[in-house]
Amino acid sequence: MQTDLRGRDMITTQEFTDDEIWTILDVAFDLKRKRAVGEPHALLRDKVLAMLFFFSSTRTRVSFEAGMAQLGGHAQFIESRTTQIKHGDTPKELGEIIGRYCDGIAVRHVEWGEGNKYIRDIAEASRVPVLNMQCEIYHPFQILADAMTIIENFGRNLKGRTINVSWAYAASYSKPMSVPHCLILLMTRFGMNVRLTHPPEFKLMPDIVEQAKENARRAGGSLELLDDFDAGFKGADIVLPKSWGPMMTTLDPDETTRITNKYQDWIADERRMALAAEHAIYMHPLPADRNIEVTDAVIDGPQSRVWDQAENRLHAQKAVMALTMR
Ligand code: CP
Image (cartoon, rainbow, N blue to C red; front, side, top):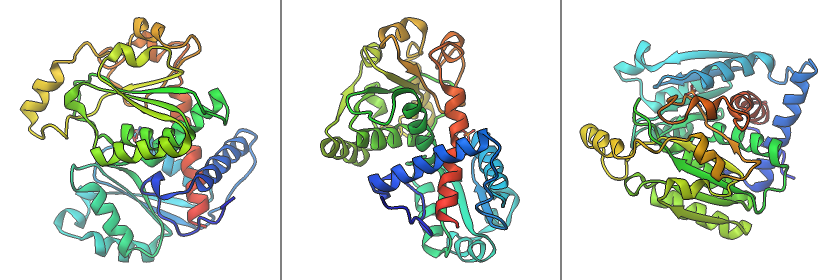
C-alpha cells in the first residue's frame, strides 16, 4: 500500500496509482468517522491553504474552508478579479510567491483551453502541493467524493456494477466536461461497466475516452457509448445524468444554445428512474437545474444520494490535504 503522498499535486486521479486512490479513500472514510464521533484530527495545525478562484463555487469553497479549519489550519479565499491577478500576475509568479506563503495552493479555473494549463503552470513553479478545484478537463475532488458515495451504497468491490454517466439538458450555462471526464476515468478503474450516454454533439475529449477505455481494459470492466437517454438508464445501478457543453462541436454561444435546445426532453424523471435497477441510486454533483435537468421528485426522492455526495466532498478533500500537505 502506497501511503506517502506528501508534496504531491492532485490535478487528476489519473496521476495516482490504484493503491494511492485507495489510500485516499481509506483516509477519507476514517476522517468521516472521526468527525462523526467528534474525535479531533488537527493533522495540519498551522498550515495554510490558498484557494484561488477564477469561477464561482458554493460546495467547493465552503468544504475546502471547513476542511482546513477541521484539520487545524486555515484557508484563504482569493478571487482572481479582486486581486492583481486580473492585472497580470502570472501563474509562474503565483506558484513561486504563494508557494512561499502557504502550504498548499488550490485553484478553480474552468475556462476552455486555459484552466488546466494555468493550474499546471502554477504547479510547475510551486514548491507546495497544487490541488485542482476544477478545471475544464478534470474535477478530481468531486469524483473522489462520488467514489465514496458509491462505495457506501455498493461496497468496495464494484466489479460488474453499472454506472450510467449521462448528459442531461440544462438551460443555465454551458457546464464543463470535467465531471463526466473524471467519472469515466475513475469508475472504469474499479472494473465497473461504465455507460457514457449523450447526444452526438456532446462528445467528450477523445483522449479522455481513450484513457477510460484503457482503464476499463486493465480493470476488466467496460466503457459503452450510447446516444439514447432511456437506454442509458436501463438496469443501471447508479445513474448520474448531468449537463455539459458541446465544446467538442462548437464554442459559439448561439450555436451552443441551438444544439442544446434540441434535447430539452433529456430530463431525469421518475419514468426514467423506473428503467434503472430497483435498488438504483441517483447522483448529481450539484448545482442542478431543477425541473429542467432533473425533476424535484427524483432529486428529492428516496433514490437520491446528492446530500451524501456533497458531504463527501469535505472528507475526500480533507484526506488529500492531510496526505499531501503534512
Ligand atoms: N459540485 C461543485 O463543484 O459545486 P460548486 O461548483 O458549488 O463548488
